[in-house]
Length: 87
View 1 (cartoon, rainbow, N blue to C red):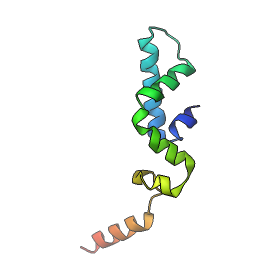
View 2: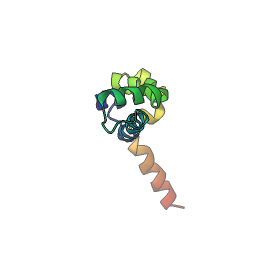
View 3: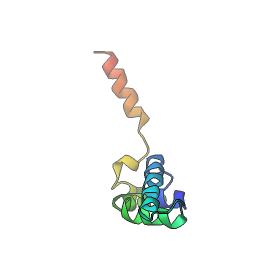
View 4: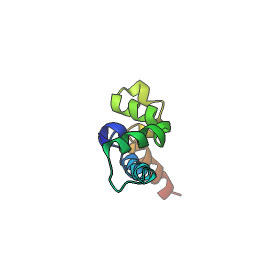
């Protein structure tokens, strides 16, 4: 369920974990429930839900809307650092 809600994006997994604990604390309960994760995703992580959906779809057109989800272009960084070292 955590992978489904976050798309497996590590930063979002941590954010969801923290937000779910916050939801549990607001319930004044010492237990952490699956529903806490769902509520946290629906409230605190709601702004990133469209990006997660695009990432999970693996559709390049949908992912293009979120450039930070696209695969890294390591060739660009190699060129960048190569040109910097010549300065």
